[in-house]
Length: 247
Image 1 (cartoon, rainbow, N blue to C red):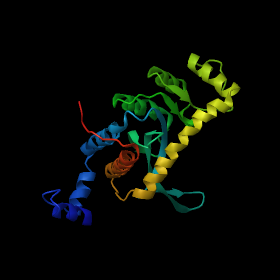
Image 2: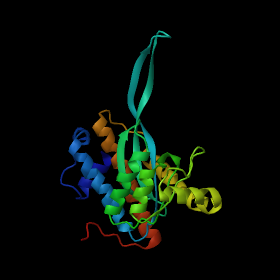
Image 3: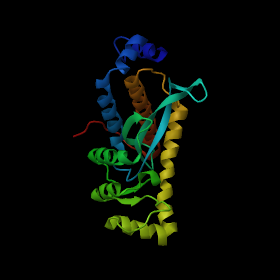
Image 4: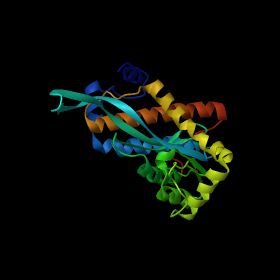
């Protein structure tokens, strides 16, 4: 509220809203696509720089708890509920090019294709994509190859080249026979962990809202603030003149 009143005093807004107004807007489901669009738009000025990407998911704690009664022990137990942020992150600037917020039980692997599609739709030239074993699947390999990118996803101990696609077999032999080259590209994905760490340190590792829709929107706002922070950093370090909503 102090920041909002300061913006009002500086003429950046006509009237500072009450905090309840902010909470009411956070709970609106029609705000979610707008925040998703703002996250993607805030990343677009770095399209000429980012070509290597990594998808991953991270959890944000909530104030809500799931409770259940355990008949065996005759007592009630509880566990903190948390939500999951799935993001595609640029390896050089740590910018988030696409994001989806879901419940904690949603797997990482199915999220790669929509995140990749949104990144490409924003105009990014995806040349390499490195991810952990959670994203290992034929469908993901085909989607990555479909945009002309190279995939660096390590195989599991029980993985075999039999029955996989042509790209699956090619990457399997690269992973098995030329491990050092593969890992050089794969370890670039550690940048996504750095991006999540920076976001949580600056803007908190949990959400304060109690309504699920508001929790999702609050998580998207954290990602948007992170993107603006990374954009300012890149503007100063890389001498970029950012332009938004350009045709």
